[in-house]
Length: 506
Image (tube, rainbow, N blue to C red; front, side, top):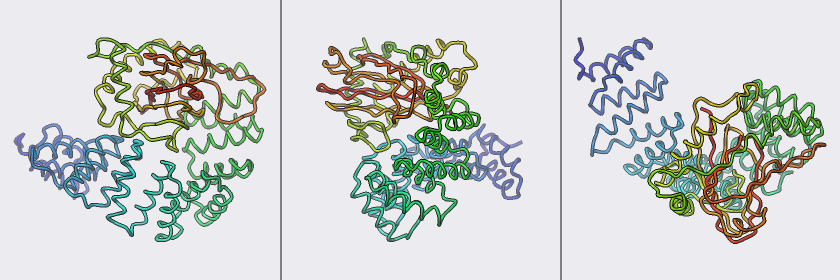
């Protein structure tokens, strides 16, 4: 019988089973090795690579992390951290991935591919200032790499640095030719800047040359819709759906296009068809509610848009470690106002005037950690208070497993958010640690939260109900993610600080 400490021998057996095609045996041996892990870093690293070959990324992350820690004060090779980072990305562990890539770069700061990996993960957590710095470093190290130039262009576009983004796209295209991803990115930039005719021409050419490149079809559909060419836009969306039937954005884009074209019944059919594929999806429920309003189905729309029932306002429980809510609010507001990821009106978000942060969950400050703990108590209360309504598409889709996204918004006079939903979340919310006196004591509605107004003037014979919520320090507001909401422009001096969040089903 093998000695429990003989991890190297067990790893070799696992490797041999994999080499001879015995994948089931290799997986069983790998699980045995994880149950009594060896102590040698090289052995742990070998097992991690076997786990990757077996497509067991969770085991690979566990073993790679153990291999790194087993080296103690002796840093692991940069490649170990790099592989750990890539594997963490596959697992959705973006904070851990950032740490791993930065550890790799601390050992080898001249690795352009690692800088590119880091930049892409930083963009995913909306840390745009750090992402653009990482992109610039990748381009500096590999100036002929068109993909690095393209990545830089995308982040610059997110930051609304449109002229510099255009120059980066053009340089990448000059090096690589008409690579579809670059052509689509450049066309998307042209559309944002009002050059929709140019964008549409480029996208039509790209889609004709690359009929299987779905982003070209989807971006073309959006540009046609913005031009009011609804029939052509619907056709492009249908082609995108045929190529990628699981993509929610295409279904919702098609339905909204049909609504604007005046085809409410067809839009409702699209919503129903999509919700059969993705029950409870926030984008689909938002589309269904808009279609029912357009059809004059007031009862059906109210069943979905029951603000009185589903919008909950409550005071946050005092987080542990703070004597009272006022002391906590002061600490949370300070952490939010100084967060290093804050950027003015990032293109991919609803904050049209004001500062919007990236994820607050990457290296969270103590007030953020305390807020998370208190928020989970409030979320448990919300779950318990949900009505017994198993046929309702929101209530019935309460997730058993979920993750939390968390960010903050800092507004001064004129700050506002456009109407929006959170299409991939189930429940959303906002907390207010700092509100200006002009909002606390004024008659409103400047700086207030408003529900019920969609992002476009969709036809509706039914008068939409607009629900206003006055922000108050210490107030927590919870609501279904498919409810359209916005912030009315702040008409007094700020700052107005909010911490927003999504509960996303796993």
